[in-house]
Image (cartoon, rainbow, N blue to C red; front, top):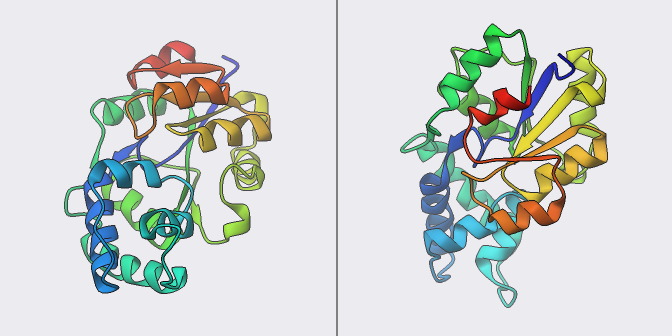
Length: 214
């Protein structure tokens, strides 16, 4: 078995967090008198970190400081991030099977680490992860490969033995940049077209299909 490790994205891959993120974004926008966004719009904004999310949500013409909007969104989200967040169907069963097979698992997200770690702890406390890496440095957010490669080192594996699994082009490009096996998933927040254009090694429609690749 050549594939011995899996690095998962979090939002849109392991967990459906969109409703709570959308609520937080709109709470932040209301704070500054900005128009609210639909859940479909918020879905298209996420995946590239909090500051990029805020820029997209506020709009190009907004004069609201992005740092202030991010703080308002973060304050609300910290209190409500688990209101409706839940694992995607099939994910618990996948994690069980990967654990049974002795596959090393980790989480790599562009969500702020202050949210990522406690949410993984609450939603996925049954399983063991070599690392849970949220974003604490904008310069290192995906698709930068350095955090992924740090996780591979913790796994004590070679990049070619590890899959990077995610629902966005940023995840796929991270995998490619790091020399990992890039796997796109279609049940998340990005279109199949975006995923295909990013050039994954594999594209899967259900969590169980990852076992077929292994």
